[in-house]
Length: 388
Image 1 (spheres, rainbow, N blue to C red):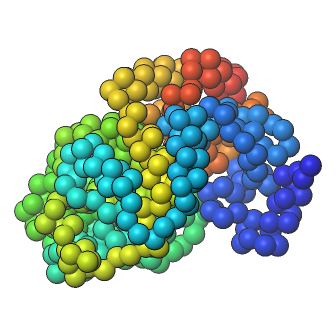
Image 2 (image 1 turned 180 degrees about the vertical axis):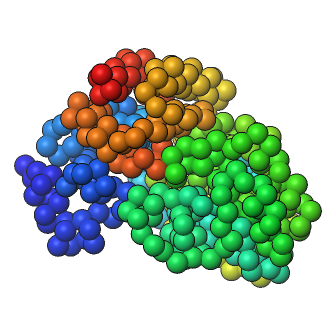
């Protein structure tokens, strides 16, 4: 059997940094090789060395029903038997679009793509075309994928690795309405994670999202919610449902693809109809609406009932009560972060005890229906042992 150490040594010679996404690296946590996953089951992940971890990362959020969810797997296998990609329209694309329009309050039309980065960069392109303006406002510590305009002062791996990246946009602090008011003149849009999830979980301050809506209306800018993380996680209709603030455009990813590479952006019909071939704003993708991804997305989204969110909220409250004594615990629905003074030490402590948190203080931990009281209590106990 190939070990993680052997795989990492080989990967370093083949893949930059040995990983295909920087957030998977463990250097910031004081460790060498990343986890090389072999399989997952429910709330658990097993690596190539046979170690079994209670997983709070869940592929960075998509797996709301846990690893290898049987219904999702069955749907993907059935779709694969019919063909893995066609390069033309399918019924499943139409059905998933209908589910998104039904679920997300502000979305009247939607375009399916393959990644959150692709969705975000196209939403920005559309906002610029619709308003005839180039500048835009975004927030320090936010993350909207790795397209050039979004990277300076970004969160996620950019912040974790301390990378000084270039970018565009007028960057202000999250929850700072006064800063937005100073920056918004002449802007095409305000681009925001309605619940910040890439500098750790930071909820919007009371009135912040409402204030963004007001400032956009007054200035003629569009309001764009990046709900790649929050969409279908903090509520079926995302943060806009939870906080009752409607954006003009919405970016979706992660859960909407059921764990496969799929993302989307949508919004008002008059804006979305600017997209080619209906309009003059170009966007295209060979694998957009891929039949395996749409099958997974439909399998997941159609099961996200109010009972599921009630269950996740109950579990979140249990985690909240247990972890709050040990640091600043921030949670919105089924996403949370425990802010502590020495996160790398806590990460290593938990990993040694078979509990896998994100290898960065700037990321979230994600609840799923597969996490039970036993998993929650085990995590609370292990964190308590660290501070004992």
